[in-house]
Image (cartoon, rainbow, N blue to C red; front, side, top):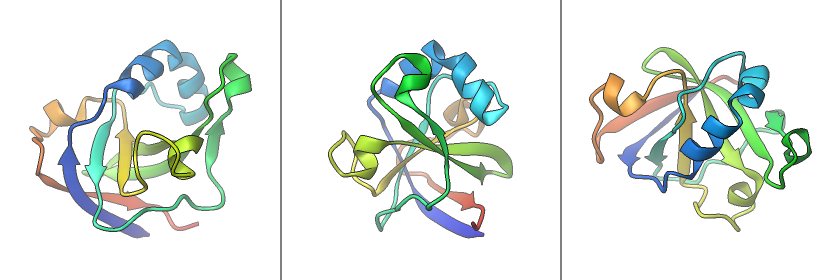
Length: 126
C-alpha cells in the first residue's frame, strides 16, 4: 500500500460537470455513485499511474477524453483517483503533482477541508 500525502488545493471544476453528466458510466466502472466533483491534492513529487488501472474510454460514452480510475482510500473511505490521459501525458490542465480524488460524498464538506490542509490517500499496491 502506497501512501500519498499532499495539500488540498482548489481545482478548476471540470470534473464536477463530467462526473454528473457521465454518472451512469462512472457508476458502472466504479460500482459507486460518485459525488460530482473531486478533491484536488498537490503532492510534493509527481505521481505516475500504475500499469493496471480501470479506464473509462471516450468511445464508451461518445466522447474524446479517456479517464484512468485508480482505487484508493481517503479518511478510510473507498474512493478513486481520477486522471485524464492528457494529464498523465503532461499535456493537460494539471501536472502529475496534482491528483484528483472522487468518492460518494463531497470530501471538502464531509471532512471540513480547506486549501492547505494535509491529507493522505492510500493507493492499493498492484
